Length: 587
View 1 (cartoon, helix red, strand yellow):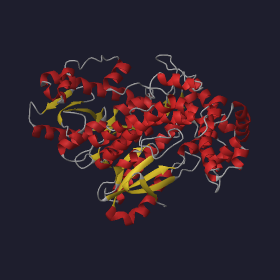
View 2 (tube, one colour; view 1 turned 180 degrees about the vertical axis):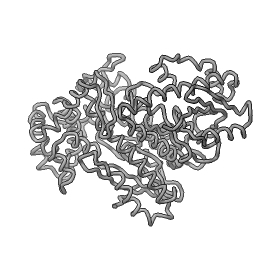
View 3 (cartoon, helix red, strand yellow; view 1 turned 90 degrees about the vertical axis):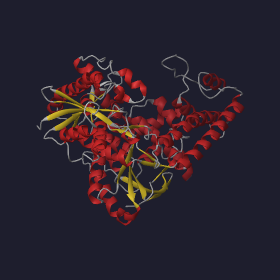
């Protein structure tokens, strides 16, 4: 293996896109010899020269949060380092080995795995409060802290990398290393946002929030808001049966899932439905203004947001997350599980001179569940023209009601069936099945029996994963990545398998698509954001005539995963002025 050198930067803040900069770095070799370079004890030009020498040397660089350190070094050097330096990422090593760890912080990993004290930076911590980061921390105080950090980074690498290799997890780890470069480029490109649309949407959300509050008070006679414990008392007065309790206080819960379940049991246009809708609208739209406002606040002078995208940060199943702002919750449209989402896509737009293409995996969760079920007839539903996975379950669940329904009603029944069939795969019992279908328990019994008789392996799939978790404590994704599952929650094994596999597909697709677009368009077109099962590409208008051919290649790269026995499919939409105004783009 190539020699390695641990590398850690010290900066004035956490975002190179908001003007923060690197002022020092530390290194540690394989024998734990350390070195520190600080512009305050040398010069800015010396820092630049020494950084270039370290990153251009005949060794791989080991970082903890490589994306951050590389971005700061690139800013200092005024050049991109992709293809110049090979990087290792200790956060990825830790995640590949232990996806359930509560923290990926350097000190937390060092304490958890080696018992290193977590108070080693106490001397420098007070200087973080002055708004200039560690820049005001005297070099003689900062120096020991820097050296200890790179020693810990090297220690983690030397302990965990051989373990990853020994267990056969080199491929998932190498994929995460490659993804660092793709993610860096996405953050650099950024996402366009319209400040004018932000203002208009914030005003609309404020008006709708007030309307929801007024409706709640008019319907219930309650002078409070649809928040807090008082909501439970009001709902029980209207005959709603609340059984879920909160963990902290033990009081009756009225969280979103409780309200949605109650809503499914009410009649449209009834007072009960209107009361529950007022709760959902108020709780969605009231904080919505703050969320939308943050998009404009975090945009640069050109109206571009550069979010922090974390390939393996917050999600136990290796899903990606983002912050400053969180763009993983930019819902496409109204869904059964959230009938009143914030219409955030209105404020996002292609940057001047570009359009955006939205490439969304079609029904990837259903396809993965069909794969894991092993039911050949169910898997064939995705390759046989005219067959519809969720409609077939709707026909089983609703029987005569499905056969006699008009198209509008069928859509509603299909949406309900979608929640039912997903629930069955994840182990939902009769009560949850009935609630999702909007059926009484008596009517749900034969409906559930029909589903189990027609697709037995699918309906019993959760039990297979429960057995695997109880026996081994983990599941493996399509790509052989091990995901530990909480021992007290073996029922989430099926969810970990599908979500972890979907994450693996999307991450590998990003790497493939990023490389293809850089070569095919000379880096003029590129990825700007992953959102759950969707990739967003910015494409120069001047090259729009080339888009169809290139996107066909992109589509092929995104679906070429023989590990899944059900073929994958991608749907493409084009946005010219706003993400809320898209048009189908057939390939």
